[in-house]
Amino acid sequence: MIKLIRIDDRLVHGQVAFTWTPALGVDCLIVANDKAAKDDFLKMTMGLAKPPNTKLVIKSLQDSIAILNDEKYRNLKILLLVNCVKDACTIAGAVAAITSINFGGIRGKEGSRPISKAIAVTDEDIVLIKEMLEKGIELEVRQVPTDTKQMIQSLI
Image: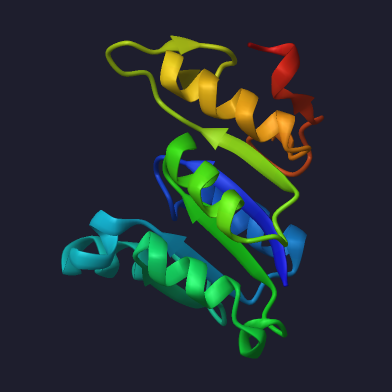
């Protein structure tokens, strides 16, 4: 069961390990990221950052979609991590169980603009956000579980 899908360009880090994981009661972190799936150093560093007694799975986007749609993984309590809006949109379009996406942290880059203290988006991101909203997917901004949800449509 997917407890949360979170967009965070840092993927596995302190907020995920020490606030989100226990708050959601998850037992598995799935990192859906093509680059990380091929990078042994990144895998090692994320492995060091994960909470104890929590499984860490780092797979490509397509492999992650296959796992999320496979009945044999339904008993896991999953926190799914992606690092960009595009990947979240791809997964949301392929996994029917995704009805809500958390925007946790997207640092500014060339061509982006801040919409909250931790989220900066590009024009391409805005198009994808609007597509997901039209499909009825809840898009909310919170850095930690105790923050009040801000709906992304009120920020763009």
